[in-house]
Image 1: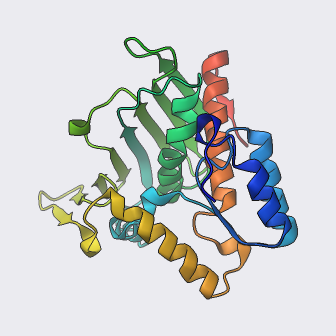
Image 2: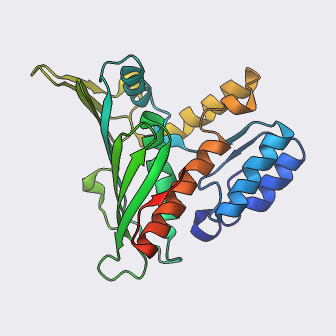
Length: 261
């Protein structure tokens, strides 16, 4: 379901509700909706109907991200301490005040949640780039439910030479850095100078390949008869990141730390 609309999500609600209401599984484009109440309605209807509902949170559907997650779950990083995320592109769109936050950073916060779990508290700062009328730059601090501290740098005023994204997770025993979703994954042990560097894990060449891998995972799960609550990159995940975004907006508006739980 690939509509767009205001903030790339304003037209999602009606067709999503119609499809879910008809009992049809839905893979929707992000953001789940640019209006949080409508996003909540979509997830609630999918739950009521017991229908698989997914969002195109494609940035983490890479072999490199899966390998990095395995390092976390196996304990190779030790106790998690810190997560840093950067995601930025050159987007001159000035169509809405919060366009940058609501359209781009569902991806950023989903990657952060994928590695570190649910978020408890949010604090954000924003600024309008040179010649901009929207909040095109942001720094967002996160406190996860497991007490990991996280940080997002986001911008619509970046360039292609900057790279698209960078994810860093630091634990008590090691850290990893994942560059551009799938291109370079580096493991840094805390007490050794011998690092491991993986290029194009699983043969994935570039970010563009993530659309195929995300759709493949959706079809794979549907074919296997996935339970709605076990969908990878679910509507509930899409709602969770949108809740973080709305908390970041509220934080900047009120100059406060906003609790989600």
